[in-house]
Image (cartoon, rainbow, N blue to C red; front, top):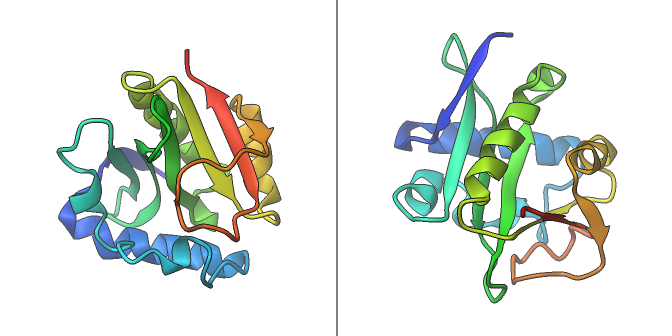
Length: 161
């Protein structure tokens, strides 16, 4: 699969919402307490564009299909800490290097503004947990911010400095 990674545009909002919901269904996360219930799930271009310290990227195939995405945003109440937000890739994008490139792009951006990067995921997203560990994230018991993702019981933190 050939693809490129670019910043989200308004035309991508519903497409990345579809990607996220598809992945959440795959892992049984289609309920309250996960990204599934986020009221602004289909408004990423508004949430992330033109705000310093926030950015969202999408993975787009050569035929224009959005197959993944990831974002960086601040963690409310935790100065110097960002969150790797809404990082999801459809099955067809997994194993292609797209997630690695998304992660690298997000963390490179994050290092300009933050000292640490936090994330939350579901207990049964084992491949994602292995991926995060491979990229230097360490498990933590300390929940940060008020993400509303109370069902995401696996927490990670990475030092960016």
